[in-house]
Length: 262
Image (cartoon, rainbow, N blue to C red; front, side, top):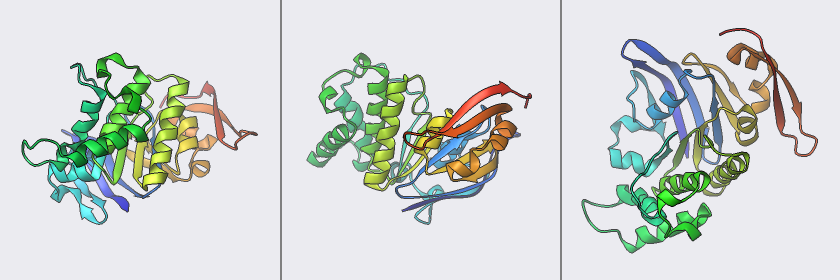
């Protein structure tokens, strides 16, 4: 399984948001996409999911251009967890996850036994089986995020895209969600690409890092290759210290002071 983005460019009217972005992610890998606000991270994810149509370039899943796919076919291949998701109607958690099976149904046909079984498995995978009868309006933020991930998994995608999956979550839930994402990538051989703001979390959970600056790729590669003091200062305008944890070897990126305006 492989996801490729080749020379992708996108404009908002006359404003160029992405310029000739290329990347490649294989099954089981997690790509962390980082960069300052306005650098094109969310736009890139939306182009990868055809929520937006690029001006130039292609997105290929196992060599097939997603521009030639129907919306249902895209949903069977790509699961998307948006930055902000609000469900105000009191659906049960089970019903929300079951909605992920829409792309596998025909017309208005009722869900099959297979759909119910897959929904149950996705609840178990994400550790929220015990919440299945609870209303979506009555659960915590961390639990809610797991429901949205479970709904995406119910699509049985080959690719999972996540836009800031730890937004507004406390430290415990951040680690819990990203542990889950990493585990799913490895167990199900999913291609995972996620936007993160926390550089320490990006370093810890990404197999590869892509740094965007003003819509262009500034650097890409292994976390220890691209997350260095020079790159971070040039992209974020901040001086940092970088060390490794004695306990687990993770990179620790500590901001020291803002050096310049970008």
